[in-house]
Image (cartoon, rainbow, N blue to C red; front, side, top):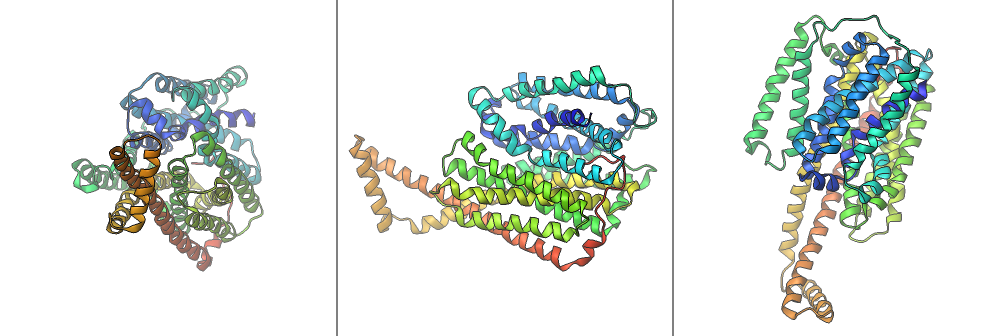
Length: 513
């Protein structure tokens, strides 16, 4: 039963980051920009985060079997729409709906598993398995879809997702009774207003962070208006949560110091986690590796994630102090960024990157599960669901912030280095003259006319400069990550009060965010 319940969450986890498996192929299929594909992932994430708290009311109203059937059928229909449409503006609302349905599917599956686990040990293992699958989704998706996308159109991945839902759906239809984990609670006084306000804030945050650089941030009225709307809606939301009897998210959680420290640690980890996207971009643009080969290289990252989650789970079960878990995790991330800083080059052997990718996966795997448990354990069990919801929101903000930082620094650092190179690359520079002469000679030897060969040599020079710009940007960004991780390690090591929170899951009804 537990295996079947876990299998019901797998297709949703796979379609979570599915558009990022090959962002250029997805953008080409929908006739959009890569930023639109990133936004479609952010919309899925926003739907998941926003609906997390409201979903509990539907969970209390419907029996488990009909709940599964309704939500899984809707998810299959949503995947079918994604399969047939080629319009990105149809894709956007459907992706948000998929995120909402994913929240329902995950929460019910894991709550049913939790209620079958009487021991704290079993609940923490379930937590680890779920988050292990979740953080492995991106490299796993790259591995299983690289050949599919190369052989077919991008939408084949949604067709595959549809068929992956069917076995679990058929099994539940035939074998599951009308079991109710809770007393039936009718759907009156749904706090849909808080859901609408919270979800709008999340979508606007995603919009600003992903498209902000493209629109020159606050110079554009769309971004400025979005920021103003977030401020207004945040004020309304805080006032509403403090004034209603049953708040959507109980703001008392922010009174607990370790809860706030846990959120900071999680946010930093997510920013550093998605910095690995720069490494994959470097493999594709500078080393000219195809997506299929990149997916194979990332097996080392995937294995690091799995081993890290297993080690972290064992440490939590052994009641190790949180500093003993976080310090090695962030040290692994620090080593990854330091090794990559010295490994970026215009020419390199891919074997050099196996160990750094493994270390990155190991670090993320070590940090993820203990941090979520630490955050939830830092507050009383009665407001644990609110803590889980905010932890989920922080992960979303970390995902969006990493995209914004990469977009900003890529443009800023590339232009800075390009201008620096222009100051030194001149027609009288002996190295430049030698490069142009050699390239012209090679091209004319291949049969190109001399005038065309001279122009082509200049273009090759510009291309070499662009490669150097990208490498320098990657090095600068990873240097910034190194300083951020060093500061985080100091925070962890210098504040012993972090160990006053015991790592354990207090509630059998709590499902992870």
